[in-house]
Length: 467
Ligand code: SF4
Image (cartoon, rainbow, N blue to C red; front, side):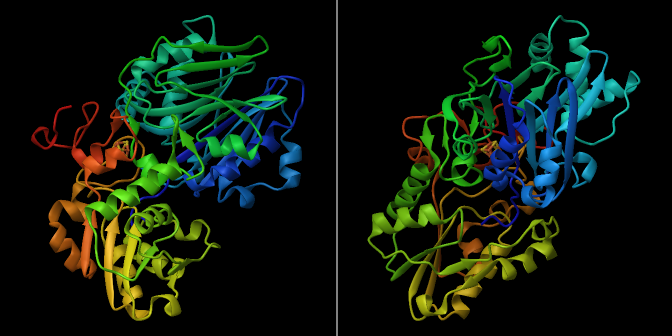
């Protein structure tokens, strides 16, 4: 459980091709499956004979939607979004999908990612008279697509023409009056996949969203690919596809659900392998392996399998915590740890415990967890982390903060061990992290390595290693 990372966003889209008007219901279940990607706000927008109706609000999917609401949202295609704020503040106005009207009708967008040059684009548009109602990148993207649409003959041309203006990460679903489109940035930072049910085409941030609605997986969108669905069928546009490929490696470590398969790699398998590699790299004499739930569980099982040290449940997570505890201040995060987790004393008492977590950001949470395990009677506490130390911020849609906040920037591993109060501390090395993804070596790992796939703001040139 990361002590600063909030989940990012999840997008979902449905196009019914045989007249069914239950798109909202399908989106509801899809968003439920993607809830781990954002718990701050959510929304669904559907298209009913070219009229867009929508509902969005702060809160979890089952808090925002009920049967009455879903029955009201009748439409044969639609898009949905779950959100956690990263750069932007947590305002209701920023909830997505973003629904806009312009000369060509309606334009509805759901976005996962972060547009690095959004402020520049916004300024350029504002200088030319544009008025924005949110601080969302999605509104900048919508304005850009609308502008391009006035120069072209179709929405897919407008989307394609917009892609080169956008720098950063974007997995988008876009709904026009008659078409549903999905597009992934040319680096492919964020996942996005395509599937089909008996009645519908589906876009989802992760395959767990396809599974939730019984959709058969067709493909991951390739980085830069645009897929359009309308009454004429499905069209793939590869004009922006390239070999830039920089899928976020942290999706596998933390963000994605373990039952998802992203670009052919099982998230669960990669986490088990991370645990195995961690056990090889940082062995220790111990009696018990436990996990920080939930994202440390798979790596802890892997550590146990490789080391032969028994795995058991040692920390219990309170599963009934809503957005109240997904809060941005340090004080709130500290309090949240005590409410979120509790130790199983009978399991831990007298044992030399290996506790596996996915990452350490600021170190505050790790310190509380180690203390909690000691208070439960552990003889020793050995912290193992299934990713390398965070040394650089992320600019591509996650909340890995500035270097000032990253404990590993200011402190050596030994200093960090002392701060969190563990008997030993071991991080998975970057070299061994790569082994968890098989032969692939084309992911973004910039928050660990400083090898940013593009120029980024706020990091001095000497801190950035070239590719
Ligand atoms: S910097 Fe880190 S978190 Fe951000 S996209 Fe790259 S690997 Fe993912």
